[in-house]
Every structure is written in C-alpha cells, then in structure tokens.
Image (cartoon, rainbow, N blue to C red; front, side, top):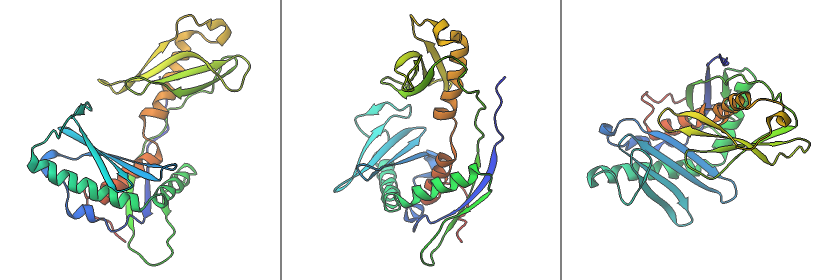
Length: 258
C-alpha cells in the first residue's frame, strides 16, 4: 500500500491584475472549464488551454496578437470549432482576454507562484506577494495534494527519467551502471486515458540482475515517480490553476479582493 503526505490548505495573496475577463465569462451552459497556462522563458510567449467537456480551445500569444485552434472534448484536433457560432464567439473572446491579461503578468506572476510554493513546502500556510505601490490584491485559498511517498532508487547504478515521443505523455526510465548520466532505457510509463493512471512497461532484453532489482519492483517504483511528477498536481500548478480561474471569473466564488 502506498503512503501519501496529507493534503494541506494554503492561502496566497497575489496581484492578478484587473481581471477584465471575469466580467465577460463564457456561457454557463458549457460548465466549468479546466484551465492550463504556461510561459516560455526562451520565446517570452504565453499559452492557455481552455478545456470544456464539449470541446477545447488552445491559445498562444504571438508577436502580432493571439493564435488559437480547437480540439474536441476528448482532446483530438479539430478542423473547426466544436461549438456553434453563438457559443464560439464568446468563448474565444473571453479566453483571448484571459490570455492577454495572463501574459501581461508574466513572468512576475509565475515567480510569485513559485515563491508561494516554496513557502508551502517549508510548512507555511500563507504567502503574501511583494508590491511596489498600493494595488488591489486577491486572496486565493487552495488545497494542495500531498505527494506519494517513494523510496530512493535502491537498485545498482544511477537512474533518471525523460519525456519520449508518443501518445499519452510517455516517459522512459534510464539506467547506467556507472555513469551519473544514465542513457540505457529499461522501462517506460505513460498515462492511461481511460483511468488517468500510469501504465508501466519493462523494456525487453534488460538484464535485471545488473540493474539490481527485479522488473516488477522497478515498475512499481516508476509508477510512483510518474504519479508525483506527471499526475498529481504540485503546489505551483494548483496555485496557477486557481489564479487563472479567479482571473477568468470561473472559480465559483465571489472575488476575495483585498
């Protein structure tokens, strides 16, 4: 039986900007969307995925504005919008405003979220961002799931994991008997889209006596690593989702503005 750290309640006071998108939320009959935002340090561009049960729109900032494309509700690429025009227009308008305001707060907001997560990891229950001048701030309250407790690598040599090409977010477990930069694939893990849980597979031809652990123990260990790194939301991701929901007016609560 696997053990997990307890879920903890955490609060963060953040500068989320004017929250203009919250004034023009998407049609309520679509339900609450899942929101995923990202910032690319190299290109200094932002992206936003808005996922409803009935369809998705993915947006990204470009030099001259915003590009977007659609997906079906199950994530497959779509040639056009999965919704009629009367739904598509307000969804795209709202999502574009949300991405624009999210982008304007980058990378400062992300830095605040990372600092807040560090405070959480140190055992604090409240983080307050620094501001240079008086401004409206928002109080976010989130429940951060505890990580699965995993043992360190108990086999021989060294291991690491990396993303590989393929469907459902696959990773490879790499091993080396002597080098601190493992490069020999010994197992893979990917997400089962039906259960949203990891599925692990041993690579054929591996000499498990050299690895120092039997294949089933390696796969069990890899499953825990995959859950912690690719399934269970971390503190930054949980806070980022809460920030986007508040900025977009879809968090389901009255704005706790300070």
